[in-house]
Image 1 (cartoon, rainbow, N blue to C red):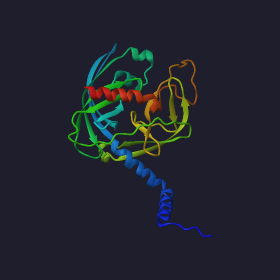
Image 2 (image 1 turned 45 degrees about the horizontal axis):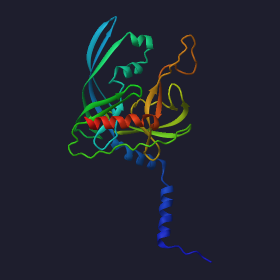
Image 3 (image 1 turned 180 degrees about the horizontal axis):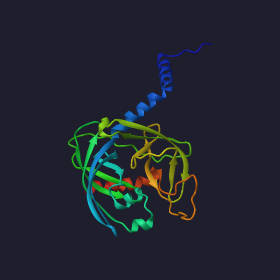
Image 4 (image 1 turned 90 degrees about the horizontal axis):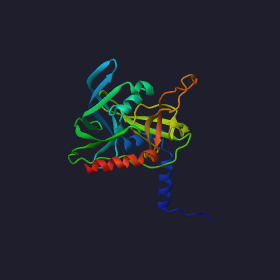
Length: 265
């Protein structure tokens, strides 16, 4: 007895076959198209005052880096590396004794947000920082009616072998082109805090890492060991700070608190 197929069933089978035949390049392109609108460029100006026994200095620093939209009303998450003295000392990988001998003060002056490849800039203000996680949060002061697309976060289990994706943007000289990085989780550590190490380091601190569906499951950051043996070198591993990923479970409460604080101001 021959089975009879309706036109609807045949079309469904055809669509499923096409979906299964999607090439890796098409899959990566779709991932970039989905996430890139949530990745912005932040232009910042800060004042850095440094005092030590050798003397003191004061200078204005201009820099740009990437951030991620985390709410529909224009709240941005980014790295706090150049926004707090604690984060800057961690970036410089200073020994605790050396760090205590240097007095650093960072005073944010201005922030401007650029969406995608546009020329328009939106003024923003700093609303919160968390030096332990290395994160900072900005609030765009006037979206001027613009609709923004926030990153979708999900507390999803990670394990060794998990493939993750970080989407950033190239500098202005490259027209802020979206840039895709793929990393693989190679270690899970519990000390000094829960984090995951990957097979390649990324310099895009503060940005989310996503799964293949474009959902953010972690944030790029650094961790530094709390116990270091100064009398012995551990060959094969650097004793300083390591690039890592904090799972959403670690950072979600900080993100929620920053959003509430930004909306209350």
